[in-house]
Length: 340
Image 1 (spheres, rainbow, N blue to C red):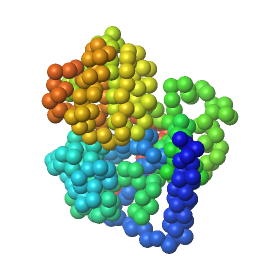
Image 2 (spheres, rainbow, N blue to C red):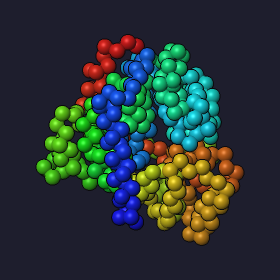
Image 3 (spheres, rainbow, N blue to C red):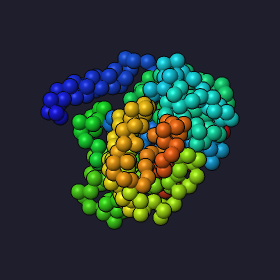
Image 4 (cartoon, rainbow, N blue to C red):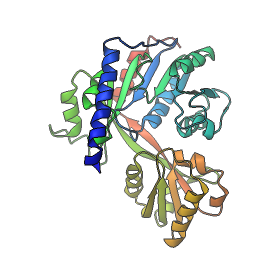
């Protein structure tokens, strides 16, 4: 299948290269918004923790005294084309169907941050500025070159396959900072020249490169968002399911935590879970004589009101990012002169 898709992949990459050249040669306009912009992105099709990292940045800058806002496309939300204010820093103004799952998840978890969605990110930045926000975190912004940015941060994983890239590896040279994902078998002691992180540092010596890890932040009951201890889950037979871009990473994380995952189900990214999908999950749960269902935080926001699941034990996993302390110090230095 990959060989059959290869010609289309190379055509897509060629189109990305040509589009970037138009910006490099100043043949396409770039719009400067009225507030500083930090872009978070990648060069792959999803699955690199951009949104959890954007959430990390919102908390980071809020703690520094900024009033940050998330600028997101609101992918597959009803407001994606028209745009809208998901959160004004005080009130949650949208449902996940309107905002899109990722933007809604951040607005719900961090109400002090502004969350703005829509294809026209420049207009979202203007609206954020009008409402008093003084810093924009642009989610999935690396390819959105029509919006000027002050810092370009790219998340990169050595487990991203070449055919899963939106643009060539060489595009990382546009980044100011590259965050390299470490996995459980990549320890800080493993710094040999053939280590993926060291190869990246050698190839992109002009970029500042730091490490990050994805860690579990806890399990929570879907019914009431109450915490669920890891110890109580380990003896249980678990069916894990998700509608995210890289489901195997989620399943692997559960197994690394010592959970007995007896079966898994993967759905497309941003999956909305129609009744037929819920019925399929319940059917497998009963066939496998499982004790518990486990999903992701992103999926949980779309399942919380589904009455079909009310009688079943369902938990979801929150994740957090552990970022190199030197990266935090670098950010503090960069933004120290920005108005707050």
